[in-house]
Every structure is written in structure tokens, then in C-alpha cells.
Image (cartoon, rainbow, N blue to C red; front, side, top):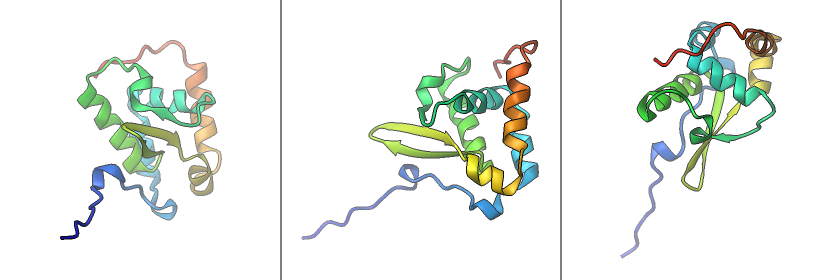
Length: 120
């Protein structure tokens, strides 16, 4: 008897096509300090980072939620490498849709040292 292999959706997270990335969703996703911190860390020269490498001040389930919001908004791309879920910014896609937005957000976040990260 031949067994077919099924790929589970969790192993291939869905990402919006570049043309379907909406400004409202991007801005909403970036409005949370934890998600902004994730984007900032990815933008600091780290091409791909495992989700556990971020050392976020939130629970694992909350962290998972933040990564999902960023992925569904089209800000990050996620994939599996072994058992690690890796994340990277969709820099080219965001530049194509909203020229200058991501660099402006990253510059503003780098300059803003007065706001501590919230733990929600």
C-alpha cells in the first residue's frame, strides 16, 4: 500500500501576494510596540531570524500572534528551516507597494529611544 505525504498548512504559512498588501493592514500591524520591535530587529541587518531569537517580553502564544499579524499584513515572510520558524522582512515587496515606507519606519524606530516596549 502506497502512502501519500501530506504537507500541513502550518509548514507553509500563507503570505499575501505583493499586489494584495494593504496600507491599512501594514500600518495597523506596525502600530504595536512589540511588532515594531520585531520589524526593527529584522531591519538591523539580520536577513533571517528564528522566532525564538527575538527574546520578546511576552508569552510564546502572544509572540506567535504578533508574528502572524506581521505575516498576514505582508510585512514579513516566514518559512521553516528544520524545526525553526524563520522570519525575514519583505523589503522589496513593501518598497514596490509603498515606496519609502519601511525605511522611514525603521529610521523613526531607531531614533525613538524614549518609549519602552510594552509587554502586552
